[in-house]
Image (cartoon, rainbow, N blue to C red; front, side, top):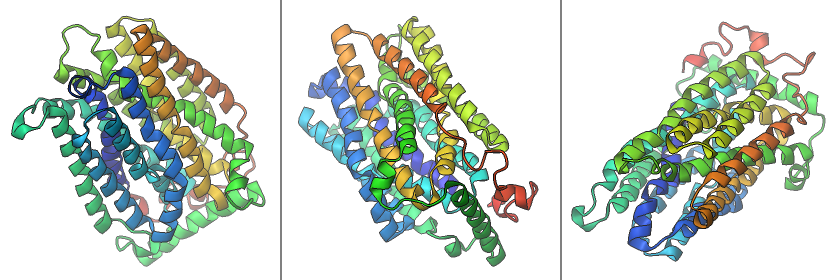
Length: 434
């Protein structure tokens, strides 16, 4: 399942971020300027936020297998329809519709993993699935560049070929997911009966330990919204998302400042920060799972992101790309250590709702940062002040992590994890090989 989620995540990120490579073409063909482009890029996240929690409620009703497949097919169709954009308003509408189609995917996957893996394995699973986003960022340039060069084929512009091809890829993956996914552990034909029971027992032991550490859980959305730790976690991840999507949508524009670049070389160079982040992500996830000390790792990653973003703002274009590689190793490696912190901090009875709420509020950073970058570039001709703002947010987020209390799973004297009880050699009775 995890490799399939990685492929779905790759398609997810490819379809939401490929407009970064079409920006100059959209301006030339449709008259979409920097501010309009930033607004359109950000409207995606407004829709994503509005429909995130309803989407997860519907997943609980229809099941993960049907709902995750539906999400993937829906965003693929909408992304392919971007080829019909005629100007600013149709661009805005399709970006909003894409956000509505994608809403619920990330929290649904994260919640899905909480029902299939104990906490001691979720960091590595999150890293393996989240690497799909980094693969998308790394390949989007080399893939989008040649598609953009298909300008004029069958009467379509290069950017239309890009949206059509990458959208249809998602549709195919979504159809495949419907026939591959299992909604419940009991439905998994690739597990024997004893393996299914061992996995269920391990997860139940984790949930029982976490419930004992948290005490009674509130009920309903309001109890989650008003929880200070949920709001604090939302702000931290909001800062992370600002860095991710500012770089996603504006990195190609920054790279174009390097003399002698074209569509193809911009695509290749823009993939470098995401390639660097892959190695940092796996390293942090592995250390976090082995030690359980994820808070110091999260603080360190945010500081690295801040230093890299600030250095990129005050450097030449070539050195700025190097510094953005450093920044990406910070902000893009955070997900595999952040979500296990959330899953250990929030009561298991409301974890699904909390994940959806944190992710939806944090994704507003995907609106604020691209739109803000567009305004800054239009007024100053540079993205330097935008990068400095990202550095400031990352530092404040690092400080906010210090106010998170230790989770029951990592506090000294806490109930042992499922892995500790079962031993390190075969923690899930052989299920890890699957």
